[in-house]
Length: 160
Image (cartoon, rainbow, N blue to C red; front, side, top):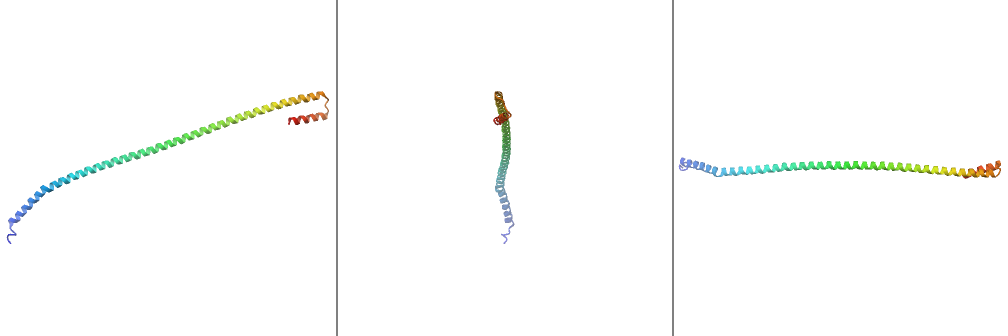
């Protein structure tokens, strides 16, 4: 049993383990650590690019929303301006129609006044003619009171 617990064997096993550990450390751990660090850097770089792209996308989204809001405002302004212009045009049309109506009414009043004057002049002419005729009849004969009443009635019938 002595061969099993030989101190030299144990020491050789320990030295072998240390050499194996150092070799594994140098051969495997360092390259794996370098690989992992390089991969970590690539992932961080990729995450950084993704974050930059996300920020750029958010900025573009914000700009698009601002442009949309500006377009909505501009559209609202154009609509408001169009409504104001339409109201002004409607007001102008109403004023022109009112002026035309006043002019037509004035013209109708002038025509009515002209017709009234014409009718009055015509009536005056008829009255003058009837008066001359009445005077002529009176002068041709002697008029009695009955004749006078009869002439007045005839005159009134013709005038009215």
